[in-house]
Length: 125
Picture (cartoon, rainbow, N blue to C red):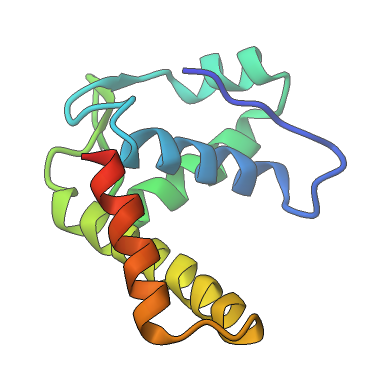
């Protein structure tokens, strides 16, 4: 699991960790049931405090992405598939909103936008 932190980001470090782990889970690089590194190990690997990794893990647990089993460890949640779908739908809506705004600004019709989306969608299949 590769997490890249940057001091130039406006996001706090714990949010950078949280968002990158969510992304790894949502794109399938981390699968349900996969073990997560301990907070101490992750802190050591990233050269941050344990408090920072704890905050990130607390957020991930709260959002349903990971679960902690006492005396066993932390794992990618197996019950988060609906939540992951919801997160991805929200992402799609955001991207489509941006595409729609750009289309309007450039005088495209709804039909032209739909045609473009259909072409892109079919190319990916």
